[in-house]
Length: 322
Image (cartoon, rainbow, N blue to C red; front, side, top):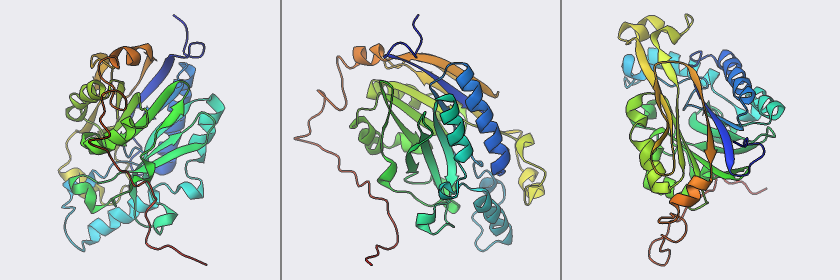
């Protein structure tokens, strides 16, 4: 079989199902860079990582009475979380960008972003696309944090509802429950998406149904990439660790990373309970076959009847005229 480097329809991708070194940006970055290298050595052209992996998902909220107002405990943990978040403008992703460029591999990474354009203190659940040249192609901030996530993450905007071209593929990505939102999915379909990446914090219950559903709906490849999180993954220097562990189960996120083909059948069924790098080669011929009877952005649309309007302006508090 031809390799993805010699055949325009083929694309080899890797799903890095790993646990963070929780709320430790530097050590988690080391692990991410290592897995980028591992994926490159298996001839991957794209490697994807789970939601909020860098520096980790806010698991403490449901374990420590996260909704208690003006709590010193919640302020302490949140302050630590903000300090370990990613500030792209300060170069916090430079090591990932350098690894992507060194290996000629694209990266999709879930991170907690602390952007200067919103003051530098509020944090966002962001999905970052880095091209094989190391350049950042898009940064999508999660439109609506889910349930208790709203206690620590701010809501994003439509600026990152963009696709990125990778060889012959058009790649889009959404964070977690955004993948259940029909209009953001439609925004990506409208731009020609044929490879959809769903980032999750973990757990089979999140990935086993929707991955195949999106493949069938969009008639493209559907990827779900999840992180892992176990009781043992909390570092000893975590603020209020004793309180977090008091009601903590052995496993908080068990993975569930998988790939569905454009007909909805499993290319890689969900992987549960272990750190791993899942690798598959996609064939775009399968997209063309399934688009024969439905194409969400083409012959099966009626823009004269229903259309979607997307505001992709980056939102901010003020507009200055000097």
